[in-house]
Amino acid sequence: MIKMIIWIDTAVKKTLTAFCAIFLLLMVVFAVYNVVMRYVFENPPVWGDLLTVLSNIWLVFFALALTVRDKDHIALDLIYSWLPVKAAFVIRQFWTLVIFCLGIIMIIYGMEAVSTMGGKYWEMWHFGWEEGKLVFKPNYMPKKYAIAIVPISGFLVCVAAIASIIEDTYKLRAGTYHHNSPSTE
Image (cartoon, rainbow, N blue to C red; front, top):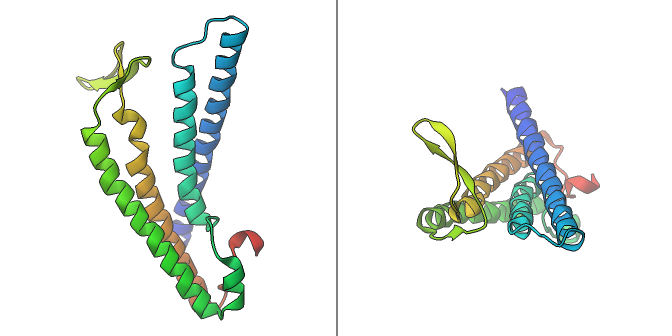
């Protein structure tokens, strides 16, 4: 059972890392394309800046879940090193629970924002699901597509926080828990 959980955790981490790499690549490609079209051909695409920004936003929100899982977020490592292991464990778990609550807030208010978001990006066409198939829609892309990352990231943050708490608890019981951040172990 533990091996399956570790396999799933590793697969999710690799998938999120791949998504981050893809969005970073897209961000660079869109930015370079936009600059070349603007300054070399003097005909910039209307969608270039928007896709660069959206790629950046989605990259940051996926990376948030990775930092929570890897415990690479802002932490008080110096203070943890001065405390006994169990006290450092309790404080770290408290902050992980706070981050979990942030994920819940992201899910709740993100779903509300997605469901009530009006408006469309005039410069973007999009694909939609109609009559059981994917169809090209040559009209404006709804803005709710862009902010759908908020509840998705909230869910991923919650899962990462739970996985982190379970992992730390298991290590504490096994006597292998260290109060240092994983990057310094």
